[in-house]
Length: 218
Image (cartoon, rainbow, N blue to C red; front, side, top):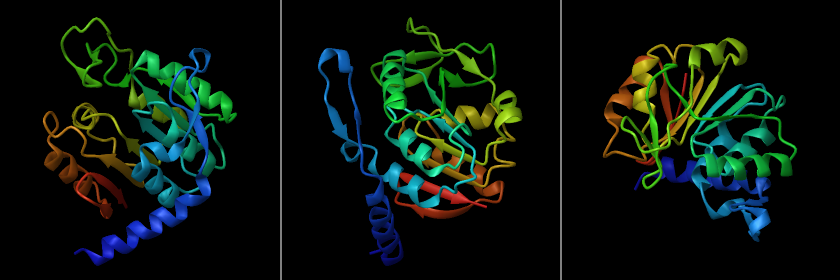
């Protein structure tokens, strides 16, 4: 038994209780009801609530309907220092509804972080990004250009294995970050040993690791 990790998990859960809220997981105009944020993405929310600082600037990859996005919004002193990236156009509609519901200030990008001009498609069945035509080509946004405006200090990645592609295309992405939180959520397509070693090579130390969710900081 990892007592240290168990103790930290208890602290994460207790700290996040102050952030209970309801948000939409479907289309309100089609009869969807508000659901508790605790119905999904729980550990991600707990890590964000525990480790984010009010002055951080956050790049969020894979926002889905926004449960973690709202936690980030509540934590930041300046809610405009938060870019929320989501490639699924249908999910983006729900994300916008939830953003408006909480009067949040984060900026939504419909697409992915990749070298501009690269050919990437969204594969709806597995909710991941692929390099072959699925009929849903992704908009691409350049990390370097966004970083000039936002000067990111935190990367939160729930992006179904795309974190390796981003590191490969932007090998300096970790230079100025102070915190990274990510999931090992698509081991079939992503080499997480490579990902873990990359962050460590940039001076990051592990804060939390349960085998699936990871938080590291400098």
